[in-house]
Image 1 (tube, rainbow, N blue to C red):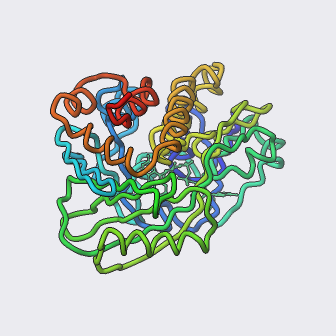
Image 2: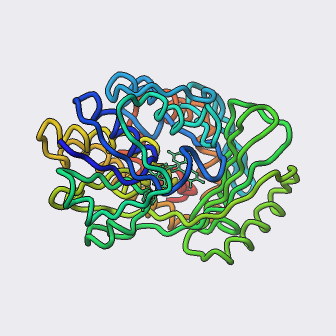
Length: 357
Ligand SMILES: Cc1cc2nc3c(=O)[nH]c(=O)nc-3n(C[C@H](O)[C@H](O)[C@H](O)COP(=O)(O)OP(=O)(O)OC[C@H]3O[C@@H](n4cnc5c(N)ncnc54)[C@H](O)[C@@H]3O)c2cc1C
């Protein structure tokens, strides 16, 4: 079988890994000259977002056969709303390095490949590759091909502005800020590389490249953030529903397959799963939509959650952040297997009520 993969990202590499397991030697076309991230940052894999799965890293190893070493376990989540702060402690997930260094998730996955050829500095043309191969898996991290194929339905358009900041950090703690003034319907977060370096990221909805700079300055000013900035970046980040995920012999996976969740903009989980499932669909002759059904359902639920979040204001953010800090509630949300995403929109509406009806 001849298989071409467009993009040596998380989904492309995990797809190649699974194809190899089935005796297929794919060729990956990679536009960059390297494997890894152009902009270093620390990603989060939140346990709460993948329930009923208990441990995302164990699941990835047991069910996807991918061995990923996280940077650190996530043990503390600090939520900030305009006037409230709540600290949650527990086994909350993992922090993942995204960079050009050895710990980067893509570099880890690439090191596990044995037979795959990666053609660097080579942009894959999906139409041509579809003629030359039995299958093409589009994993280019964007929605352009998906859009051209008529499979993309936009959900959320955001601009991300981020930085590597220097200071003093708890290496296992993540901060999340919710404030409509500088995030609109987005959010901001800080995830540490170690106790001296962290990635600080602001996600703002429905703004352009220029406007996000204003919100970034407002964020730093409002939250009195004075870390030394070592490196900065900006990037558009879109979330959308994709259907179908297969057109002829072309399969769409990762961001190109619509895995970016419409709530937080996370996509590591969905990228790894859809990459592996695309390989299983073609090697085991299975229906791709069925194999990725759980990821699609998860994102549809998160879209409902996103819509509920969009209707809240800063006073409601204060109430939500206060409520999730209440011992019984924080225990229920973070330290039980309750599928919070499934009931998320309803829970959010309840938490944001002021108790007067
Ligand atoms: C700043 C930022 C922070 C994030 N934080 C988190 C987080 O905390 N948690 C989380 O779960 N997710 C997070 N995400 C999202 C997550 O990183 C992505 O969903 C995931 O990496 C997508 O994987 P992918 O394989 O689809 O694409 P990518 O990993 O982006 O890989 C795509 C690859 O395709 C290549 N390419 C592009 N076009 C072509 C072409 N024409 N030909 C050949 N190659 C091409 C690119 O160079 C790249 O190597 C974040 C994203 C950003 C930008």
